[in-house]
Length: 244
Ligand code: IPE
Ligand code: IPE
Ligand code: MG
Image 1 (cartoon, protein in one colour):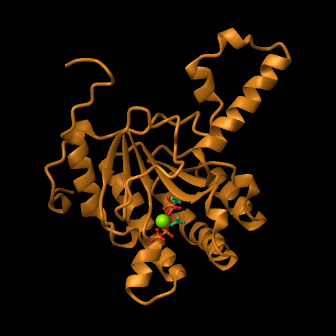
Image 2: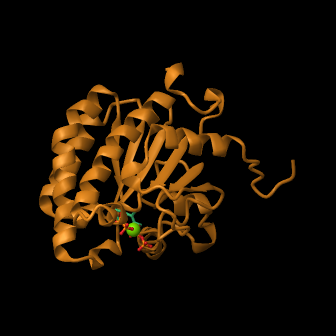
Image 3: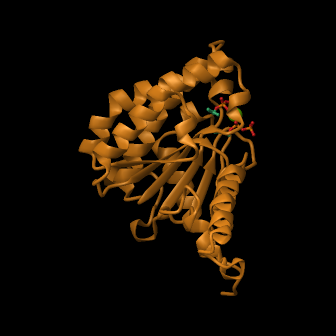
C-alpha cells in the first residue's frame, strides 16, 4: 500500500464520507474533439479507479453524483447514453464490486429512471446488500431540493394522520426522511472540473462539509488526486461553529 501513497495521509484521520460531484466529462471530450458521450465513457473508468482506491483507503461512504434532477434537460441522445452506460457499468462491474466487499446503495428518485436501470440497480443492491466494505452511494435522479421536498411530503402526511405533532419535528426527523437517511453527512465534498457550486447536491447534508475543488476533469481524476483531496481535508480545522 505504501508505495502508492504520494501524499502523507493519516490513515487514522480518514473522512468517513466523501461525496463527489463528478464534473467535466463533456469538456474533457470536447478538448479531444470527441462526442460528449466519449467523455462519459471515460468517466466510468475513473469511477472504477476511485471506488477501488476509496475501499483501499478505508473510506466508509463514497457518494457519487451521477445524474441530477436537472440533467433531464440535456439532449435525449446524451440522457439515453448515460442511462445505457449505467446499465453497462452495473452489468459488468457488480460481481467485481461484490468480490471487493463494496455495498451499493442509491440516493435520489431512482425509480423514475428507465426500467432497465431500475432493475440493474435493485439487482446490484440485493447482491451487495450484506457487504461491509465501502458503501457506494450512487446519486441518480438526485436533487437536494427534491429530496427535502419528498421528506416534507412524508412528514406532512404523518402530521395529517395524527402520528406526529408539527411541534415535535426535529432536524433528525427531517434527515431520517431523506434518501440519505442511512448515510452520515459528508465530511468532504469534491468537485472536479473547476466549477465551484453545489448544483443541487446534498443540500441538507453538507451543512458542515469541507469542500475541495480541482480544475481536473473527471476522466483525468485518479487515485493520486483523491489522496491529494484527502490530504487537504486532513489539514483543515473543522470547528462546527464552536471554538478551538
Ligand atoms: C459530468 O460531466 C457528468 C454528468 C453530469 C452526468 P458533464 O457532462 O457535466 O461535463 P461538462 O460539465 O459538460 O464538461
Ligand atoms: C452536476 O453537474 C451534476 C452531476 C455531476 C451529475 P452539472 O454539470 O449538471 O452541473 P451544472 O449544470 O454545471 O451546474
Ligand atoms: Mg457539468
